[in-house]
Image 1: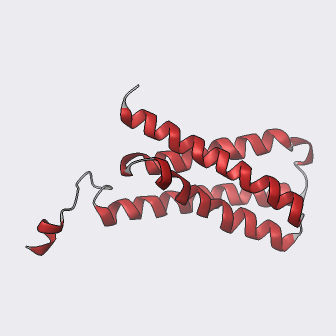
Image 2: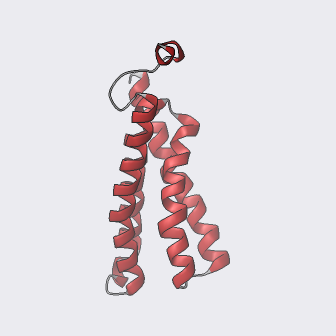
Length: 130
């Protein structure tokens, strides 16, 4: 396994485990109501999905790690609560899945463009001075 694939795997696992580690105490301590549901699924989840890969990966694999970790996390969540597929909470989670995948993809892609990674180019401080 090359270094890039290992980085992507580490980033994906970081997102997956980090989201589960955030979900368990959040749901046990706060409980679920409309406010906590919106805060967790639309604020905490995408923020962790963007931030956690930065701790363990280089710049090249962050978008893949964030999106793969989110997809696996949502797949586990659907598997765990598939009996409640008619509830409003389940529908809100599915809406957040689509919104978070799009917002995380845009966010990590824009960060790559800012640093030059999105275009496959690395920006030097010397090339910006010219």
